[in-house]
Structure formats: structure tokens, C-alpha cells
Image 1 (cartoon, one colour):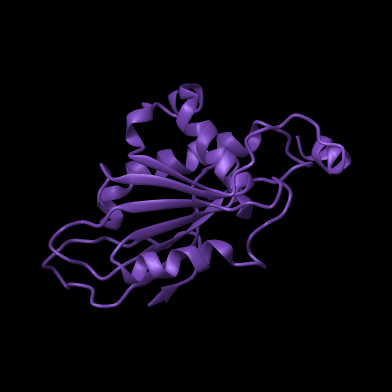
Image 2 (cartoon, one colour; image 1 turned 135 degrees about the vertical axis):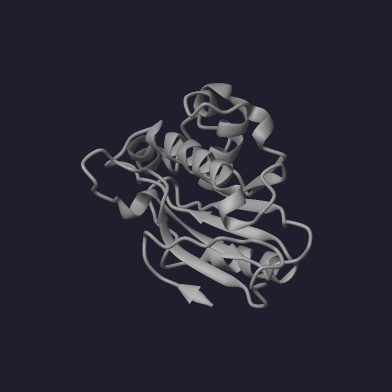
Length: 190
């Protein structure tokens, strides 16, 4: 089942109308602005496996793209999510505001806000809030590592680093020292 729309909610209560098919909730906003405007870049897609007696873990996937490109056209997040979903793991594919329009640390602050939303809503969506993992590709791996290793970002959201059970970095960018061949793009991104 695929559900579109930013205000869609799914209440998972094992035993009551047990869901037999995976559910995809698309473009859920994780930031509620005071003016009511929803920024699509501050949204996530949530893929939930069929309900079982044990709540599934959640993997929060953060896309790469040198902090400047969206994953919506490449669908790397979806490619990572589908096998996990078939294995009984819930997956949130997070979007974040892009550079150079939004400079660092906007991207990691967005990730922390998404984590905060997903921690708060674990019961609502039916995954295990004590088993939340971060996975990121390229620049997404950098953001996952940064939010996991610098407690200030989660603290700003009222969270402790212990809410993250683990981090999976895929081809991460961790050394931000200027490189000769990419210095122009890199300076624009960071």
C-alpha cells in the first residue's frame, strides 16, 4: 500500500486490523514551521513492513549528492530501503535542504530534526524506538556520522546520542580538506 500526502498518519497496533502488506508513507514533513509552510526538502518517506508481534527496527537513510543534489531522481534511498523492507526492517528515507542555498550546518540540523520526529512517532508508526540506526551514502554518510558523533545536534532537539543504536556509512565523505580536482565544487557545497 502506498499513501501519498504530507499529513498522512499510520497507526500500528498489533492485533487490531493487522496490516499484511508493506506500507509506504510519502513526503511526511518532519519540521512544522510556525507559518504553516511545508518545505518538501524537510520531509521523509517511511516504508513499513507488514506488522508482526515484534516491532521492527528502523533504519534512517540519508542520501548523498555532495550536499547539493537530491536523491529523488536517483532513488538510491529507495534501492537501499526495499531489500531492508523485505527483511522486516522499517526504513525512513530523509530529505534535507540542499547547499549552496542552505549552508552547513543546515543539512545536519535537518537530519537531527528528522531523527527527533521519528523517535517521537515510533509508537504511532509501529517500529521499535530503541532500535534506530542511521545509514548514509557519500555526503549522507558524513551527515550520519556528524549527528552521531557531535552530541550538540541531537541535544538541540532534546535527544541524547544514545537514541541512535548504530551508524552505517557507505562511501562516506569524512575528510573535508580541499582537494585539487574538486576544490571549486567543494567550496560551493561547504
